[in-house]
Image (tube, rainbow, N blue to C red; front, side):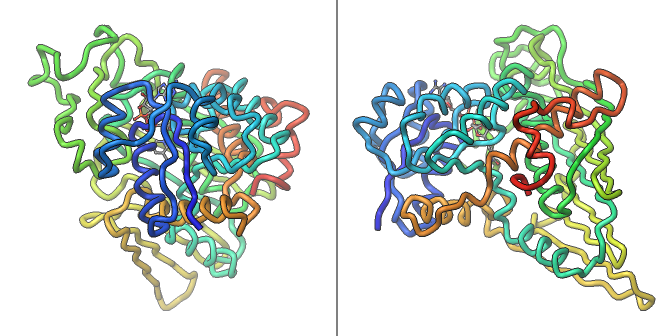
Length: 408
Ligand SMILES: NC(=O)c1ccc[n+]([C@@H]2O[C@H](COP(=O)([O-])OP(=O)(O)OC[C@H]3O[C@@H](n4cnc5c(N)ncnc54)[C@H](O)[C@@H]3O)[C@@H](O)[C@H]2O)c1
């Protein structure tokens, strides 16, 4: 049964989802139409999808009325998500909403309330949960291989590149990396460990990016580009771009607008004595260390290299607590796919939601809310200089996410 999707924001993720959804379902998903205000992005999206013309609509209303999609993807910039979701209030087919839910606590909370009252399914693109390597780690932990989970240590190390040359460089447009980027990592930490976060404290610094350069300065028109070691060198290779973020973006990372911290580290206390740490840095390029996850239990530990050098495979190291020193290693080929090969599984799930073969979203708004509430509480703690409990920032009517019933 073929299904047609509408896409709001046909930029990097929009165009990639369109192709991936088609390929992963062997052509069962096609594009009903897109809403994309930028002519160049629209043309690049058609090119990426090997299509000359894709129906393009001037508004979401027009997309719904004329395109009649079976499902809609919201892949616009973070700070537009709530506004775009509101326009789908009377649309009851499945919606895929990109992470993060939005950029502010206020709008994130509005989205959670909207989702609870909405008649249709809303799936959040927490794509890492679908990745075979994460699914396997989850099975290993649930089977009791590492015993009772005690602690976790997650870290992320990537360079400026994609993050600070795009809209993500400001809190107003991206929300800050504790929700823009760490949404995935915090969500995976909670998913794998089953832990329910209670309090968090963070040290947050902006140590390299930002400055006094004009907000409209780009590497491509900067007189100092050859002297700058943060310049975007890859902006002519977008077609072959392996990354999920448009490398044609080359906004200056030293502009006045840049206010997103680039080096942060937090400690998380969870219910039942579990604790964990998460840290990320955006100016230290370390091959193979983009994402490293360690989970320690009473009977052993798992260490996941999400993109191990030199071939960017996923590796699970299993260290049972034994006297022989026996270990176990499992490797995951991503077949050249981004998102650790989670995308095709997400696509098939969305297809099943559209056909009705499945009726429950695998990655929910409540799960995303919990991860983002943790990120926002961490940001608050960095300002306050003390532990902040999630209960302090989650409104009364949504406190049930903190008891774990809806969010794990
Ligand atoms: N799940 C993931 O792993 C993942 C990875 C990358 C990006 N994302 C998310 O996807 C979203 C888009 O990111 P991106 O990297 O594709 O950004 P992008 O800038 O490449 O694409 C966003 C597109 O939205 C368009 N747009 C702007 N205003 C619009 C409007 N009013 N209506 C419709 N479209 C509009 C822009 O012109 C642009 O083409 C973000 O929320 C981002 O966080 C998720």
